[in-house]
Amino acid sequence: MGPSVRRENEMKKLWGGRFKAELHETAKRFSYSLVVDHELLGADIKVSMAHALMLGKVGIISEREAKSLVKGLWRVLASIKKKTLCDLLHDYEDIHTLIQSELEKKVGKLARKLHTGRSRNDLVTTSTRIYLKEKITTVLETLNQFQSALVTQAEKNRNIMIPGYTHLQRAQVVLLSHLLLAYVEMLERDKSRLLDAQKRMNECPLGSGALAGSSLPLNRGYVSKLLGFDRPTANSLDAVSDRDYVIEVISSISIVFMHLSRFCEDLILWNSQEFGFIALDDQYSTGSSLMPHKKNPDMLELIRGKSGEVYGNLMSVLVTMKGLPLAYNRDMQEDKRSLFASLRILLDTLTVLNGTVRTIRVDQAACEQASKDSFLFATDLLEYLVKKKVPFLEAHQIVGALVRHALDSHTTLGGLPFEIYQKYSRVFKKDVFDLFDPRVSISSKVSLGSPKPELVVKQIRLWKERLKAEAKRLKQAHHRGQ
Ligand code: ARG
Image: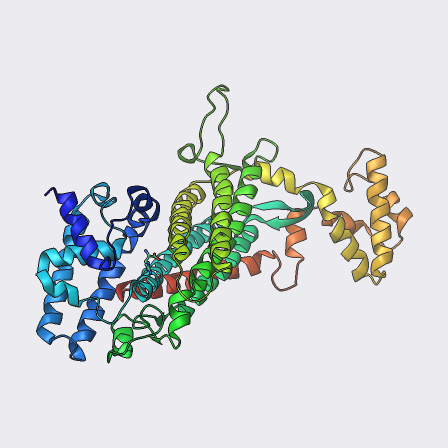
């Protein structure tokens, strides 16, 4: 009997008592999920250990048996880690089946007691939650590091001014650091969404059985506590059949990608010859196969492009779930491909983007040149008049007319002579020309949240403290395995 045939027999004995025939080869290939859910190995072992300890504690098995199962599971973990996935893929239905079979090799018949009082339905959702709780902490740490990279650049370039844009038209002067901090704010909300999802999924489904709980005296509170959950889930049908937490995570990741994709778009524009505000490092740029002069921002374009895959993953799980009657249906197995892929893409993206941002060189001269465009100060002119009690709409008309005049005379706002200003409004004094200075423009801002240099410097300081404290908290959470 070859190893593969032997394994098949073990499998049949595992869950296939009622069947006469083996699953058809094509059906196997179609339905087996180890290629995806091997990712749950560590989590699934942890959950099984807690379950074994609980079975021992309530006397369903002896304490000695529980200990042997736990020991065996440690050995299973080590031995599966050593194997190559390819050798296992066609012989085991999923990670739970693989662990069960391996355990039997380590501890013999005792292994058959492990699955007492549980089903793969409550097991898979418990393991996925355990996996996710930890993974979210990793994602939060990585997001935090990326925010720090943005803050570092903001601090380094705190004196650099650039035009801010609306409709991709030059609008008003801002500080480059203010713009970078805008993304830090967005990412902070992204983190809070993930944290929120992490909190909400922190209930333990194990003990819900296939769908209707168990007649065995399981201690669900104990398992929940061992696994670091807040509490056991309250309804067995809900516990085994919802994947809202998976959807929450992928949708939070989708929103992260919406932000990252916009950031990449900003960088791509700034890195173009047309803007020239920044230069990407060679390490994060690529050449063209035909045009030798090209240095392309491919990493940023790929991030923008990969957002599409993440949104697709979100749609995929939403559509998979929407028509399912309670409780478990096999369709739900498909959630993990989308979930793991989204997490992987996000972590890879953040690693690349972190490096890209940390190595950006800012072209101060180009930024200065662009910030001198005197049309950027039209709004300052308007507020100049308003400060001198000219009604807002009237002031708007006056400055609009000046802009028209400048364009018709092929000059700039700053290039118009004082007489012309006077022609449109007597309120203008000679000091109006002081306004055509980007530094004056941003320094004149008084509203909270504006790019006034003192306010931005304060924000940089606050973010540095906040991100440092958060990094510390996340490190501790990681140590606790959460
Ligand atoms: N591989 C399955 C999944 O990920 C595990 C649960 C199987 N349950 C079942 N009733 N076939 O959903």
